[in-house]
Image (cartoon, rainbow, N blue to C red):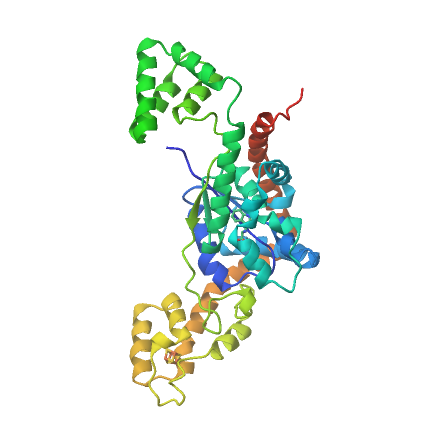
Length: 400
Ligand code: TRP
Ligand code: SF4
């Protein structure tokens, strides 16, 4: 069936760390080989919460793109761009705002949650309330089919689906759509026309996907029929009119198993991260001061890896034989915690080394990075323009 188009964004609010790498970025890197992918810097979204610290955003935008590239997001396989360089996002946001009930925005759970969590900031702003709608515009403007996100973002994708549905419901029908569709059926001829009706009924009554597929194939193959009539017949199959905006699906990002330096999830807000740009001394020091199983107060006290964040790191970075060595050595107190941390430090440094080398190369060549992004913005804009033409049409804005 339809080919997938994957879209995701990240807010530029600081350094990327190993949690991002082991969660989001590894997932993006895998997806870029499987589907068409668009990845963008959500700088307007960052402004909704960081409107009073624009310097953080400005600095983070390029650093973040460098981190993506260094981690392995490949401009030959994915379109990399910046939200604010594609003004169509803002245009669609404005147009969608016309049909967005305030109550839908107010009941998105992140609205109240984030306001409480970030209580030091005044987030009773128009921009912050509209955060999910801006996100909807990001997604719908590309007719993306799949949106990889973390669990916290699922309500935003569901909200987006509701907005797309509402939009299609209000604007998806041209005047006299039913009559025009019926006339197009007649043009199929009596035999094919009857077959079309039969398959349409089978799909609408009992959701018969096979009937839907064969009807679609029949219409595509139909010779000498105008594009407009084909569109109408395709739209009429599913009941409504034209699908102007596409309902996306979310694709849950596998949770990162990367623990932070205090054993909680690695996150900037917990101040427990190892950044992708961290130097080796600092990595070594941070891991060496990581808490371990409190039962091992003395070197001779046995411990349990299940109660130790260092073990979680071994699960990511160590092979089977090292893991066996940790399990038995910890439980029998035959190894000490510093000794146990050695292979983890080595593993993290080995992972970071090529990333940091590539980051240094990109950092030395800002023109290269800017060109990659400029090219990505252009590609993205082309896609966005196509959608906006249909949206403006539907909303009566294509004056001529
Ligand atoms: N809100 C997302 C986050 O905080 C970032 C984002 C903005 C996004 N626009 C998007 C993610 C569109 C996916 C699709 O993680
Ligand atoms: Fe943790 Fe390793 Fe120490 Fe056991 S030996 S408590 S797994 S650091």
